[in-house]
Image (cartoon, rainbow, N blue to C red; front, side):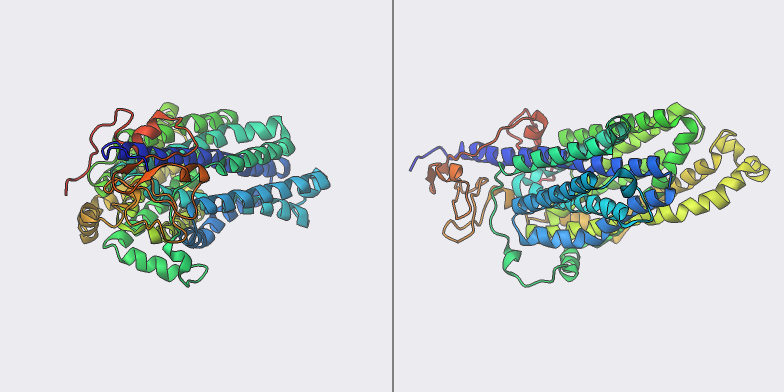
Length: 531
């Protein structure tokens, strides 16, 4: 036995979880970028080669629909298995799907794969679609990994980094997918995606996530445990109202999803519009970085509602005139605010929902939220085209609204954005007055269900299936069970004083260091309610 001072144990041990978190975060970033890159390249390729809006719409709509359908299944799988195994499974299935698509590309001529009346187009697109959808399983696993590896007071910061990863994916997709199809063609684009997916999977196999065998692994439950998810949501007072509010917020967001491109293409040539989307998507990265640096305050629910109100004001104002700079600036700020809303919801779930059921709750939330925006998009598009836009193009509409919206182009879409933004403001402000807001705020301030998850209490070193517990801060102990990386198992352990353990990997991002460990990287005292 090798003894270390108890005061040194938390720093040494927490560094292991930090390395694991950084590794998983970087790996997920590569996987998300690769999947988005190929999926959007497919939609660009289909439209450019067929000029079929119907085929493009079906391909894009099927993606969101399948995400909503399978989110609950993915959440159940995450709860029943170790997070690392879920991520490996997801990566392997995605790699296999992309490889099958590559074989189809080699076996059949391009004209056969583009024949919308034949089976091979739908098989080719369906295989890529399957790989892209399954890859999203690791995003649910990533959210639960934050609870597992990051101390409670730093989870808002870690969720900000997750938002940054999502923003990076959007930037790369917006700029490079179209360029790749236009310059390299679909074949080389597919080859690049396969190579990057393989590299991400190989890197993932080198990461070790210290975790015990999930309690749900021994429970009998259906493949899609909707009832268990509902029970977990109802166990936290006010959480269901939060999910409903997030779903409604996404419904309003569907208005912008449907009409942002048509409005932008009236202001910019199509080539410039793609660059504008790429530039404005950097707002995702900045917004996520701000959350990673400063957190979400003592009450993330309050922060989320204030941000939603700000988004509503912004959405109502950024098309009041057809000035390109106003539109671009508005989109950039709007993008920067999105990670704050997403991080707040994730932080609340991670605080008030036990880790054992978080996968199902995140899946439950994803199912509703993934379906909501496309529903609004499908509804608002015909209303805009056949009712609002003709009205605003006519003399009556211009005469009634010119004082507010001016007389430039796209005034029909501007009116829709104005109304949608004001509705968002009203509902965001009204949420402050609800009983659910008060209940959930109190629950967040007092809940301790996951307070010790990332500090490792409760691990039994003699129970089969336990893994290394890297965050034993209060007891200063680390436990080694059956599923431990042999490099870690060799570390000397003292169950009375402290531990020194080893794990492969390195910390490559100062921001992630500060987010996962308040004692490193110059982090200040966490902004948490002392209650």
